[in-house]
Length: 111
Image (cartoon, rainbow, N blue to C red; front, side, top):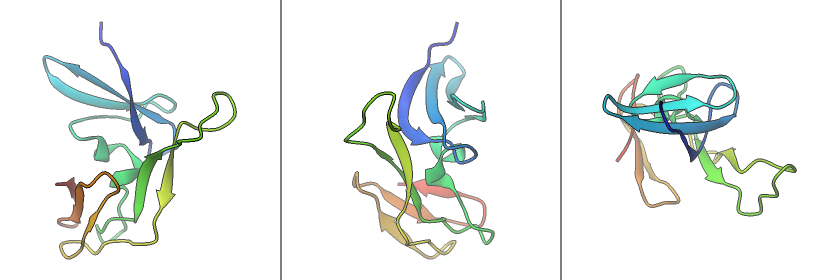
């Protein structure tokens, strides 16, 4: 049986909470609401990995709600920071200190 844990990410398709599971086959991320699933990095399913038609980063990032009240508001939400990235050109630093780069037209990587 697979065990799941919460992440501080929301689904790019429905904004539901993203769960993470690790087993002998690797890492899996799945939306708790719509079931969108991927193996590998969380950016493939979460709003942080949302891209524009040209492949650049859409300027979204997931953030934990520090004033969360269970049953009243979401624990994690997606924020548009107003700074979309051009594919293969731009890099920005996220609030946790990691660097986000739009590497090519199909991939966004957290460095």
